[in-house]
Image 1 (cartoon, rainbow, N blue to C red):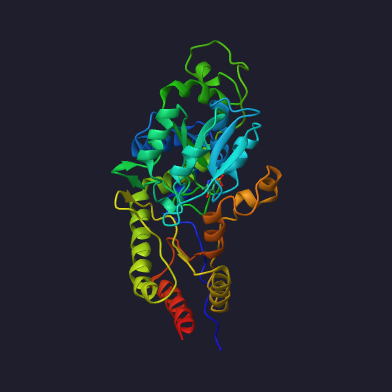
Image 2: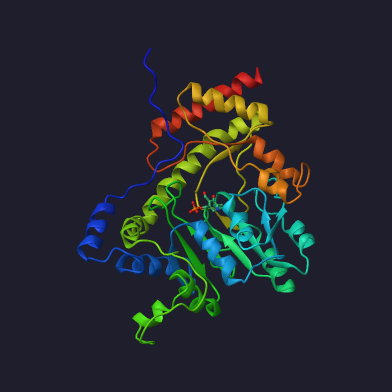
Length: 384
Ligand SMILES: Cc1ncc(COP(=O)(O)O)c(C=O)c1O
């Protein structure tokens, strides 16, 4: 019997211009950071998001680390983060000596629960770092009100949310900072990469120094100082222009990439919705004031055992699927901070029930039909 070809969970979108732009970068004989393509990407992102300044970084992780330095986060400080996120969402602050204060999520959007955030604020809280999970905005109106009342900055971890909107405003322009990821699992990619989005102009000058290893190199190149020197802490946070060239080819075609992703997302949703009504499988929820970024497509099974069964069932049909995130508060590091079972009950429950379906720009209609049929077959076995 012929085995169906494997359907991948994720694969990068390729626009066709990536190698041409990389060749161009090489021809310019300037492939380190802050070059021609870096500037093109930064300007494009700045316009798209509507921010004051964008700096390309080596990853979303390094952009988060820059936020922690810019906010002078240090030992004894606290940063409120969702437990339902990627490890960098907490690690960037722990690296500076802070304690992550884990907040639980809403069971519908899987975004941080703003009512809990407010209760977790103490005099030590230095930042609230939120995630627009799956590219669906957090409840930004109440979160921004909390931020204003308590004078605590918000960092939008916008790894999933580029091109998403909240009440018509682009995700990434709402917090003091936002961080982007261009890892190859993201909608636009350069393999590994990221960006720091700065929405408060007071942080720009220092951010440019941190970005360049703690030097005032930027001022030197602008002719403002006659030599550059060490003026602050910092690191090599900037992305190579070779990768920026790859990224620019993707960003230029972002509308096309997004259009394909939105069609795929809607196709999954429309096909699985009738089934969701008959079975215990539920689908992503997008509030009316959010335009999601079509970053990923997940289903929620009634419990972990059925989630694991569906994953095995899909694997038997050569279809990749994946779950995430394991609750950070129950990780070895989280437990080291004193967290335990029951601290974020919604996160604990959702994490065991969530399954991500193959979702990427190279997914063909036939492949998507195979996934949909497999989920439907599994659900019908369940119902019987
Ligand atoms: C929500 C979130 N934040 C941050 C990251 C880290 O991104 P990067 O790999 O660009 O550092 C990820 C990675 O997938 C993520 O999902």
